[in-house]
Length: 226
Image 1 (cartoon, rainbow, N blue to C red):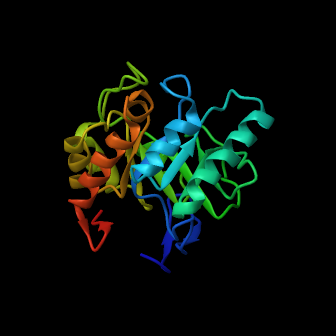
Image 2: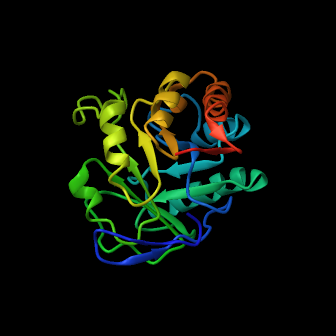
Image 3: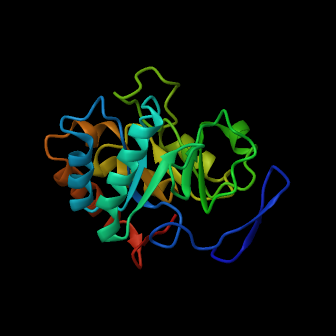
């Protein structure tokens, strides 16, 4: 709840002030980059995704030299700026921005930035949270991007973890159809993160549009009930 202070398993407190380019934590559809899967140059894929309604993008590409990755981050921010979107960066280096997404392995504690997310996969990782603003929970479904990466949570497992997290959660992993978006919403998440399906799509804008429409069908006053 905006303005509320939450106590976390790490023993700290956190003020849930509005954050991010749209004034909050990630919700709805979050597009995650992977240039190796992309069928077009990454800026073209993201430009199409933004045209389809994406307002949150998570830049991965951690193997790139910093200068190249910084240039890519700046380009993606240019694509998001006209629609008030936000670029999240797989951190801890925010690449001259103010929003990072951290791995479950660390660093701990998280950096003092306006918007910080964390990848989580089980209750033990959720208990390590301290001042993070949101989490991703994965993998929800079997995924082509990371085949064999852990047993999928499935909607029931996702719902269980959602009840254990003190911050908004995004579903990640195999959420590639409107039906799966709806199933994740029913589990109580604030949004879904999509990587491979968008990167591999012949029509990224069309795919994102269909997922955004699925979100719209499950919102209350423009926001996910979860």
